[in-house]
Image 1 (cartoon, rainbow, N blue to C red):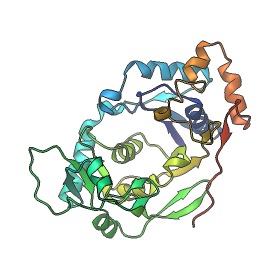
Image 2 (image 1 turned 135 degrees about the vertical axis):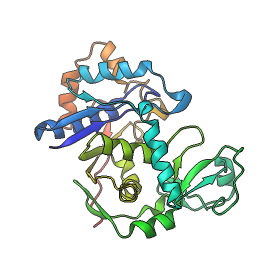
Image 3 (image 1 turned 30 degrees about the vertical axis):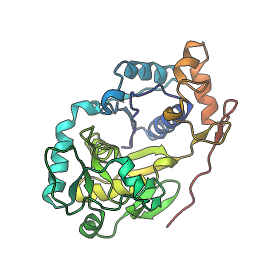
Image 4 (image 1 turned 180 degrees about the vertical axis):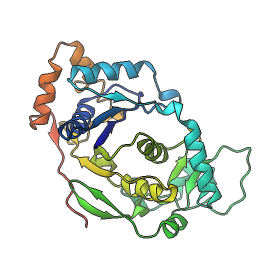
Length: 285
């Protein structure tokens, strides 16, 4: 049975891009007689606002979607800690006390997802009194995992190559897990069989597939869909205030717009004014 999920973080209001993603995941599951899950990713420290979870539920109901809700991330901290401990025991994590400013000052190599950490703290003695993130020793992890692939419904079979991330953070200084570790563990725990999300997270799937191999987790399929773009050609994003501008779902809902009609327009590719779609990725087999 196909199981998809929509997993928003309550650190800002949802926007039209979230609606498109939720509708895509919902419809793929429903058309196959499967399940569509809602999971609240609420471990983003002080940025998480519990009241937004109820707003999200109202938004999804307004769009005409039905879902099964699974436990929020804040209830799963023990699983993140246990997985990180396993990776430490395997010799695949190391503590890092570098700040973002310190990393940028080193003029690091830039990858698809930004600055690639140059491994400054790898092999150094660590003072337990200093706050540290825990990074994946990518070279050691790739050696241990061996050659891997993952399958995207739109882009085809991909050879795992997470080098665009370098030694990615799996346990943050200010949170019990990074997105990479938490989402990978949660999808396995929830029985997700098709990870449906935007193209901006395409490259992250290389990291997630490797974590699945290292931790002995089931391997889902992936479906990375187009992104909604604003009038300037940039993707809609909470960090750019898209949820509070004219693209916000709550504002449109409270203004009396028909959410089901909006969902139907998004399904057929009829974008609201000022919105465009990015292009799908081609196969990288």
